[in-house]
Amino acid sequence: MEINSIYQVYFNCELKTKEEVYSFISEIVCQDNPSQKEEVIHQLNDREKVGSILIAEHVLLPHIESNQIKKSQILFIRLANPIRSWDCDTKDICLLIVILLKKNESVQIKKQITLFTRALADEEYLNRLLNHKEKEDFIKEIIKN
Image 1 (cartoon, rainbow, N blue to C red):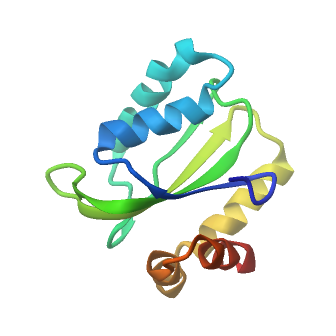
Image 2: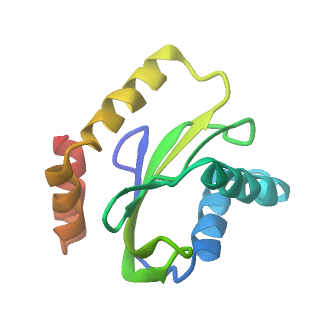
């Protein structure tokens, strides 16, 4: 569900593994060009090799900048059930905030995304996102930020 030009919310998603999550993200990115899905998955995995994408307990921040991305966006993927084992170090993931930045994005959009990422440093904000049980409350929390 799109709540503005940048944010997309997927609430109570039935994704059970890292592979399913990355496949889901690649489907969103590559709606117009399914042949590029594997490349997006590869880029997400490569980014994770650079450093942990865990930003708080139960919260991941996968992010890439790519030519495959036609529209920069931030995806909020709230899982129906935690992913018990993302990898050998990362457990019990409930929320993914995915930043997808297209190559050569405008300064205005980059500023908007940068402003949003500052909110992610607020542990209380992340806790509120984790604790909302209703989609409407979850969306209100995002919009309020």
